[in-house]
Image (cartoon, rainbow, N blue to C red; front, side):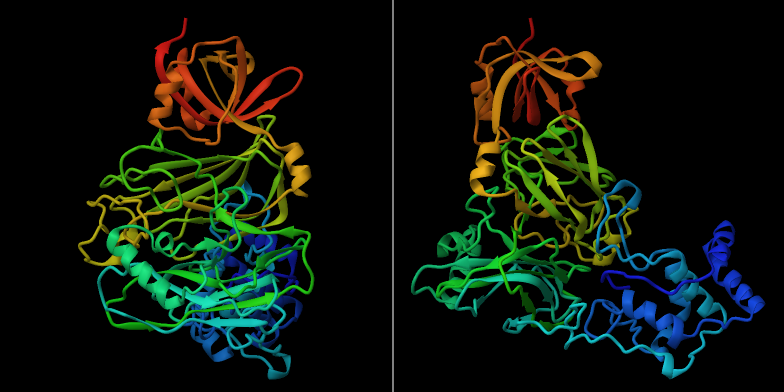
Length: 592
């Protein structure tokens, strides 16, 4: 089923629904049909009752050219063929897919789930014979504007088409980089966008950025740089001296991700007076970083990007970037920035591989924010072994809120979750993302890679690398956000990440404390290296005390009364100094 926003639907008998819930969802249609016969009303028909639901909630995916085109639901004939499957999928709430746990998440405006009345209508339609009804009752089929999914049927202002790519039947395909010149004479604000792969079976994901290149550099030059970079084991971006046209303000020099495609996420439209910036200039290109997966036969693909522009500048500029990756904890061990190994994509650490047959490998990511900011969208990304994700916020006063819980992460349905109300975070807040991975024989996703001997079975390790293939893994908890207010006001409200050495203890109300602590020293990094730990080990105890916030992922109970090196955002008021912790490591020496 589709992932477009839902609106109101046909109203059915609420009393019957309450009774049917007691009988189980499969009884809804029968109960409804019986009630309809008793009061003389008509059984549901496709034209009058079913088509409005399908057109609103399903055909964004179940139509030609979309991810579920093999099961089209745009006509009576195609829907009737799939009637049994429709009943089974909606009655079990497997469709429309919504992996988030609504009881343990905030509210999202792109939640596509059907209400009880819609489910009852679809089930009753199947149970009463799947009648066609009168064509006069059939609503018009929503325009797809040649495949574009804008809910208003509005055609894009710009469509950028990439050159066609020919792909081999098998083998490992390095990420394909393609670039298109920005076709603008002045900057534009993007109100909506859609990334459309030409061949859904091939494209695993796409990351899109806007880049600036030096005078005289052509797309052909960039392709040559990328090829040489792959052969040398370095990024082609470095060789080409490509720079972000729009940078991530929380990580200067890093790219704002203009767009992202994953299965299930293709169209997005911005709200709350927000938009994304597309710069204009002679040396600016839109860069497509595409991860393809082979299918066992030669294939071809041509991807496209559609843009809808806002008439005026918004109040809030949106940025998209990996979040909660400043510090990464793997199975309880905080990773050091100078650990040996290849840095995992989107992070500054080498994440250890998932061992064979590990069923619950855990990664925890942490990033604190020194300035006010607002989160609009959350998008967890992993591969075949991804099991679950949870995003939480630790506020400067220490209280914690779960923002998004995805208990059953689905490699084939990787949604971006748009918050109904943007989440404003004051300076000193911290985002924590916990993910688990299943590399056991119980993970049926691993069998989808067939008998390929590459790292796809539970008997193999799964690595976190750069340009990961589907049989590798990723930890990419993306967010889309805006900075809070004008730069001058943000600067006035900004806090600092500091480091201090002290003794780990438990205070009043079971609060964790860093006692006998040194004075805070401002530091540019939120995590720590082994070299830095050696330096901090020489720092003597002091007379300070800090309350430690959000410390549980660091398993402090293992280090009670030990000398510790701590980092975090320093939050001070008249009564207490707090550290919203981003790093907590034992160092040489014991507490007095």
